Amino acid sequence: MLTILLTDLKNPITYLPTSLILAVALIFIRRLLTHPPKSPHRSLPLFLLLTYAYITLQFAFFSRPPGSRSTISLIPGATWGTTIQSHAYVIENILMTIPLGILLPSLWPGKSSLRSLAKCLSITLACSVALETAQFLTQRGHCQTDDVLANVAGAIIGWMLFYIGSKIITAVGRP
Image (tube, rainbow, N blue to C red; front, side):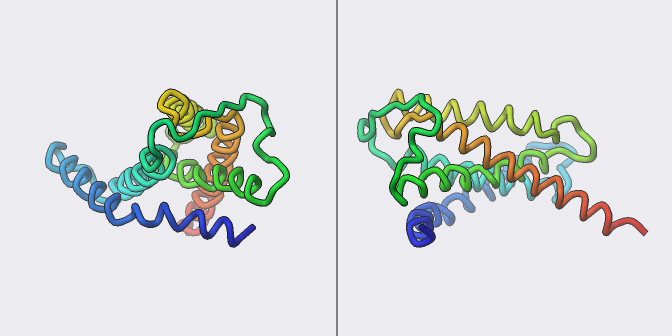
């Protein structure tokens, strides 16, 4: 299964150079338009989120020709299937949103309510449903309830990593 996952993850890596250039350009434009300019340490999570968003949209939507996939599955668990490849697809959907679970709460400082698990999951759920709907309408992807559930699971894992990491950073920073 690891071989399948590594093979499937090669494609998104090809989008990295373009995503980095676009993210740098957008951050630069943001800094020019913001008075006073935002501090650089606040720009890093936004830069990473923009890079992530571009790669994800390219991989999950724009890289597929319209009309190439037309199935819909609203039954939870139906895509797990019996093959290693079908298991890999579910795991890839989980892995795909772990960065989102880390990056969303890192955009807001301190104890902002926007850092909460509920807000992170709400945004992830909305983005995932929007992507699945767009895939269905354009037939650029299989519209599946399992994809939404796996995306939310990935965001939960990412948010927990963010939470644990922020607690460790806070603990290390104390005298």
